Length: 71
Image (cartoon, rainbow, N blue to C red; front, side, top):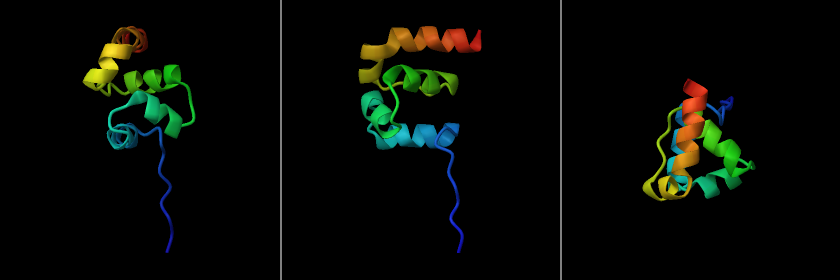
């Protein structure tokens, strides 16, 4: 029996983990052991929409980051 390796940066895995983290970017950043800035960039890179609460706190930075990444 072999185990499958999962890439935590895969867009589907990242989105699922964001769901598991109750759509809380702070909690997700802790799980990924990175800072919130890095997590915002990862979510923006893969066009993963923020929760309403995260939009209130990080929406402007997320939008700017997303625009910078996608031109």
